[in-house]
Image (cartoon, rainbow, N blue to C red; front, side, top):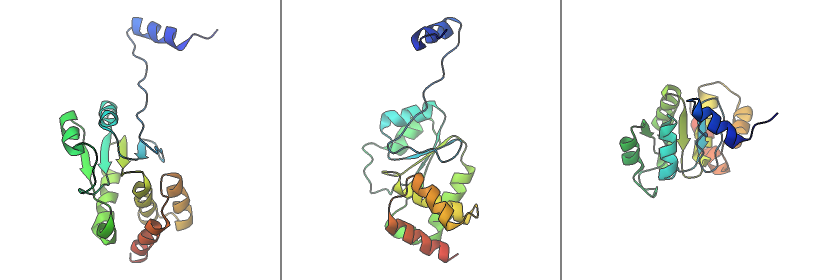
Length: 166
């Protein structure tokens, strides 16, 4: 016998149990690893859902990019751990950009949501991370990165130059 979801929710509520909350999502959402959510820019409502679910936020957008709201201030108001690593243009030529991302990604309390505008830069930095920190072959890493949001061949080429310089 199956119990309809509404009846099950009412039964659990009556017994003092809350049904599990839905997992927050982002535009172009990908889940490449346990406790990791990649995607595009969260709306303020999505940021609130991420905060309620206990996510740490790792924002890869540059300060010049319009988020539609003050994400850092909203994160502070919500009590959510928030870090910004600006990824774009000249910062992709700086070793410190990659090193900061690697450090924050490894040390972030899980679950962690990593976002840029669309998820492309997230996939790109993940590609660099998989090769530089996990020792994955570039072929395997780029396949995993493409499945995680990387779409730009020019971004991949820029990251390959960083990897070549190591």
